[in-house]
Image (cartoon, rainbow, N blue to C red):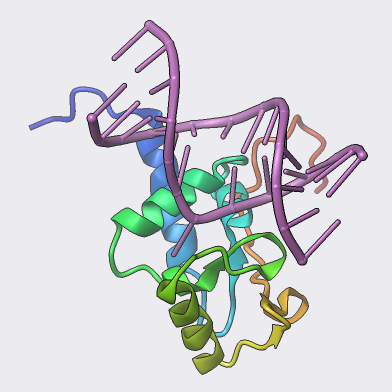
Length: 117
DNA sequence: ACTGTGACACTGG
DNA sequence: ACCAGTGCCACAG
């Protein structure tokens, strides 16, 4: 078998999955941040799609920009509940990003040169 | 092929 | 705080 042609997007989705999986307990990140960390800035929606498609991911650790819970309905309450359970604190209806925003370390999109040793 | 929709982000009023 | 418009990408009808 051979994959006739792997769309490059598949690989990006892969990185997104890894980033989400790397979210440690008690930490959270935003859709846009995950996308950027995966080297696919602007793909916040694709992050959402991945969260919906791939089971086993800590979906509750991914929130909207500024720590806002963007999930409507009971699932949103479920997310807050689980986060609290992990020790995440809230500031009003939003996650206290100042304390729980996860710092991804690596990837960085290919910026034009300018690297520093 | 086009349109509408989506657990989005950002800007502006 | 809320809503509207715009940009982004992928998918369903």
